[in-house]
Amino acid sequence: MQQTAEQIFAQINYLSLAEDLRCKGYAIIDHALPIELETALLKHLMDTPSEKMRVAGIGREQQQTLNSFVRRDQIKWIEPTTQVEQAWLSHMEALRLILNRQLLLGLFSYESHFAQYNAGDFYKKHLDAFNGQTNRVLSTVYYLNPNWQAEYGGELVMYDPENHTQEIERILPELGRMVIFLSEEFPHEVLPADRMRYSIAGWFRVNNSINNQVDPPK
Ligand code: OGA
Ligand code: MN
Image (cartoon, rainbow, N blue to C red; front, side, top):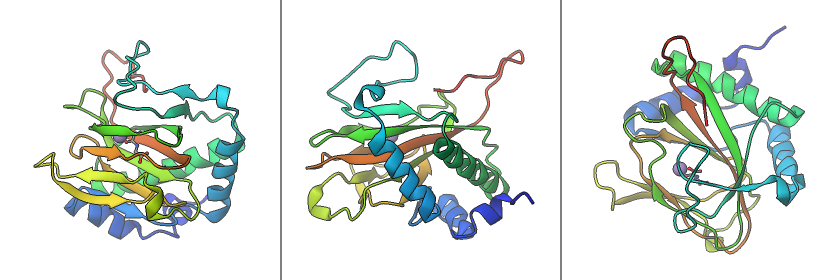
């Protein structure tokens, strides 16, 4: 029998997730996914040959400006080509349905990529979306680093939407932790770490189709 979205996410308190998003604009969920999927994703990323990872660009066009002053991570877009990527995407699809039911956001699609930050890599303070340009509504970051310690660095720094110089929280990229935030509201930054840092960054988008042409993601 097919599981409902709520059954798939039975292990998280999605009511308090929705409440946090409504009241604060962001939420942190530990142990967001089943442990088997968490382990499989980490293994998949560690087994990905480095030539399959690409230097990340800025902006969503193909002719991205590669700007190593802003970001230094390497990425690989997730496609439903392997079982583990399919499992990730079906969990995020379940989350999309839950968020739409709880928050009436009209989220239409989800795009995501693996990201690898080598020691010393960073992503300077940025917004994931500007004035609806990319139709990114909610950003997600899911971390794949077992036993991450504060002294390693590599925190995600969240800044105040009203005052972009004011830090509101530093979040360690610990295995199984998911951070979800409003893409247009929260400036955020990835601090350099002293070792490899793995994550999956993703975005729930609304549709902006014109003349029946579905707005392409990425
Ligand atoms: C991003 C991003 C945050 C992180 O990829 O846009 O902000 O903690 N990632 O990896
Ligand atoms: Mn970002």
